[in-house]
Length: 217
Image (cartoon, rainbow, N blue to C red; front, side):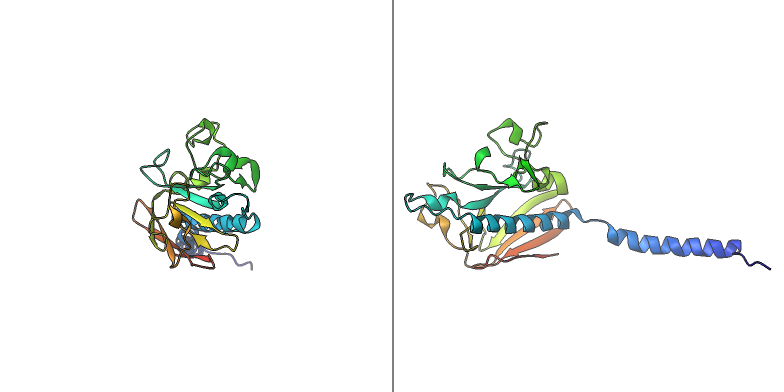
């Protein structure tokens, strides 16, 4: 005589599967704020890498240090589309403290894109333009819902994060008019906090001297 599941047993199995799905699926969903922090951490390390492999030292140019590879942040209220974003560039040869198209890093995965989340100066660098040639993911507000980037510790006034040829983090505004201390080494942990509209936050820490960066969820 063949055995088969009764209707009650089938219903029980379906209920158990439903309970397991309800427990597992939420934990497998992505967290946009954490994704933004992981991406930012990766690009901080990439900026450090560029600074180490592409040393801008030029004995014939007294201002060579202003051309180091750096990450510049745009904050809500000042950004092109009012969203926090960032750009990776080498301020060379203008030394004006701001990025131009020719100074921006290329997307290593697509050389037709530059590493900016939106910038002024050219229509195709504006994220709202259909011809945008930057990387929308670098616009943390647009892509991940980040509403603010706050800084504390060794980079409390951070707008630019620069690294020297040894990978050491440097703070300052990095333009010719910024003064002699604009390229001072960070001497305490640089704390960067990303927040969303629900006041959730993720913290990134960049250590002085080594430039080692990590995330605290």
